[in-house]
Image 1 (cartoon, rainbow, N blue to C red):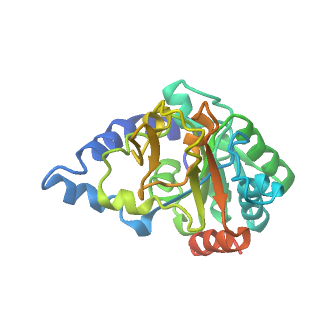
Image 2 (tube, one colour):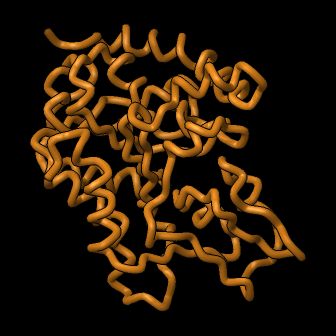
Amino acid sequence: MKGFPKWLVKLNFFLAVPVVNFGKHAGRLPVIKNIVNLFFIKSFNQVTAIPISRHVAVNESIDARSTTLPLGMIDKLVEAASYVMILNECVCRSYYRKGPVDIGCMVLGKAALDIHPSNGRIINTIEAKAHVRKAADAGLVANVAHVWIDPVGFGVTSFKNMLFICFCGHDSCLYTDNLNKRCPNLDNAYKKLDGMSVVIDESLCSGCGLCAEKCFVSAIKMNNGKAVIGDVCKGCGRCISECPEKAMGLRIDDFDSVYSQLLKRVSCFADIG
């Protein structure tokens, strides 16, 4: 039996938004935080950000071909997946009425076959890569996600074989919005990849503070008129595309090592090999 039809998926989402946002805000309150934390246990909530925006520059110390590396990681995941489904629209942006609604998430793994066809369609590798580039051109961030709210919202029971690649924008995402006061489990569930980091050229930084304002996890602080990235950075790269001085860039130490880390993180959740 297929999962929920599109109208029911959207209804579930609309009902979930105020509940999830309350949980994020209440996640640090005494007593309540212990309850909220249970809903964000790492085993059922794992998200990894991949900066795919074409506005995200790779640090100049790395070979010029590295500018394609973040996109390349998503390409390799798509190539390794047994099935890929593209959703007809982004439910988040449809709800918030902000950004490109037609750039929907992609579902990787056998669970894609269990999603009701009114929500999207199975696509080939070429179509999937073209969709990723469409998201990149729109300045979106790719979040590779294995979270319990997806199978619940779509009425799918095979959570173990489901991996989402969500293309998220600013102030229009159920998962990444309102994370500046996140509970500990939610913070731990959203992890950046070791060997991939955002860097700042202090000589170019004007101290405008826009990156700190736009950082959804409050990882950037201003110190003596310069932006400083803290340890809680998730590596999404959104700040890079926001910087008017082009003072921020992405550093990837070794593509194969970083991709192997990503593959190890997600392969136990979906048929990705």
